[in-house]
Amino acid sequence: MSAAPCEWIHLTKERRVQQPISLVEASPDCRDAMADLFRTVCRQGDALPFTPDIPDAAFDAMWLSAGVQTYVALVDGSLAGMYKLNANLPGRAAHVGSATYLVRPDLQGQGIGTAMLRDSLARAAAQGYRSMQFNFVVSTNRAAVSLYERHGFRIVGTLPEAFLHARSGFVDAYVMSRPIAPAMQ
Ligand SMILES: CC(C)(COP(=O)(O)OP(=O)(O)OC[C@H]1O[C@@H](n2cnc3c(N)ncnc32)[C@H](O)[C@@H]1OP(=O)(O)O)[C@@H](O)C(=O)NCCC(=O)NCCS
Image (tube, rainbow, N blue to C red; front, side, top):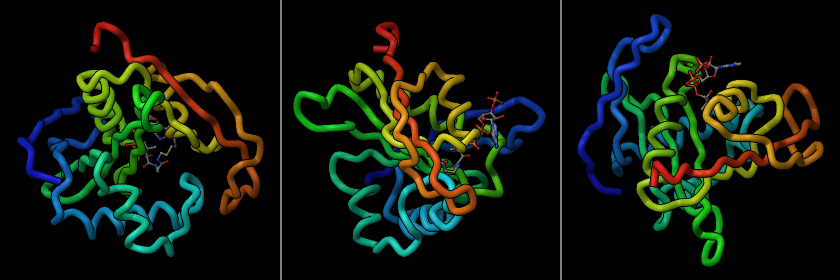
């Protein structure tokens, strides 16, 4: 994790966050707030397969290890969201990227996820990934599914009842994928 120049994204729709969102590479200073956000989303039990008691070392391995690029969305200097970008698999499948996005619950639905998704697609294209794949999108997660579909992802597989939703019980999970357009590469 090293410092990177800030990139400012101004979202103009009325319901969007009015403050500029800064998307920067995660610094070690962000780690505790990132782990808090991760556990907060896990606690809701509707989007991620992990439980909030995930050990620090497991969080670090997933989000902050070599081979994983981690970016944070800052609003007013505070952590509003985070995402990671990495190869989905090594070696002969390393041309397929994957990513995970998390937005602070009180700031969801205001465009931060869209900004992070677009940023990750641009970075994936610049790095020569040929496609982007999400391995486990909970089917009831309308915010995620609609965000991805709006950006060209389609459901390429359904994992029957693969997720134990905190309120809905066993629900399907989707594998979603989209090509990285040659124009973007
Ligand atoms: C999924 C997530 C990253 C999306 O980020 P976000 O900042 O809330 O999304 P945005 O505000 O950019 O909204 C994206 C689109 O989804 C729509 N949307 C947002 N919340 C929605 C909801 N509850 N139901 C349906 N659509 C929704 C928005 O209207 C927007 O559509 P638009 O571009 O046509 O305006 C965020 O909700 C989140 O962190 N959820 C918990 C963790 C998670 O599910 N991560 C993804 C795991 S696969």
